[in-house]
Image (cartoon, rainbow, N blue to C red; front, side, top):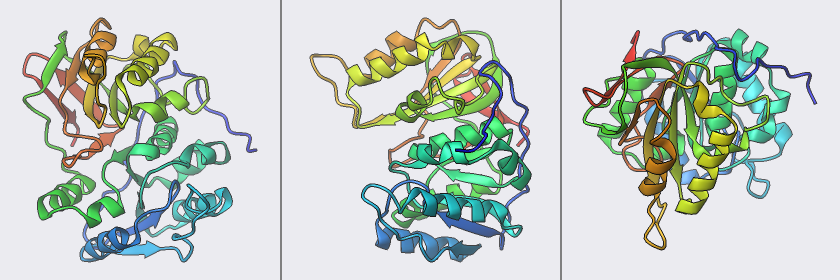
Amino acid sequence: MSNWRCASYNDPVRTTKPRRVTRGAVLRVVAPSGPFDADAFHRGVAFLSERYEVRVGDSIHARDGFLAGSDERRLRELREALADPDTSAIVAARGGYGSTRLLEDLSTTEIRGAGKWLVGFSDITALHALWARAGVQSLHGPMVAWLGNADDLQRAQWVAALEGTHPPFTDLDVWCDGDLAEGHLVGGNLAVLCSLVGTPFAPPLTNAVLFLEEVGEAPYRIDRMLTTLRQAGWFHRVRAVVVGEFIGCAGAKGIEADDVLRERLGDLGVPVLAGLGVGHGPRNRALPFGAVAQVDSESNQVSFLGD
């Protein structure tokens, strides 16, 4: 185990933006979580190779049950990507499960020193939290295998986001209004975030805007996870909450996922906006984690400052 150390939950972290990604930049593809569909992966790599130099390690197709190879293999691959001086962005092949197993062997010092974009979502939420702890911005967005099945519009939006274009999300649903709120954007998959409660790897929350999304969880499980975050004091420190897609979260006994979300988030005393096309659905627009998000419940939108 490393001598990993981080700031407390209450310490705000100033973020820095890695160098800009442009045409011809080096992208390093890693699989820090689960194995992936090879055909979709190769289509995604082929698409990326039309614009960037894509580097893929020889062992990326390894499988060890529900993991993309051993912890040692996945950690080594990620560390090699961090250490590669040519690499501008580290892009995950897929989510699944496994990135939390790597956290205690990574340090904020090496992530801060590398200063590289991390791209991914779902299980990659755990690594986004570590990037946030290091004060380095990252991109919550589609991964290589997802891009292999995406249409031209989705791919174009992904490239634009990676290269620094982040248009506002408009016409959102206002679940709780309030004053105009600004804060560094953190968050991701609800279940993964709950797995970080009580650990030193949770994202910095003070004065943040917290984003949440989920897939395949029943409403009562969503209720339990939100209650955990409430009781852990997460919502006491944030300036706003923004809600993405909750896909495949079918209701039972007349209770839907939205009912639970509205009830658990509606009394926080901060703006809560929902309806962002981000998550496990077909839209899944990229979000610049670590950038300053402005949440405006009067105009029903979330925009990003400094882009």
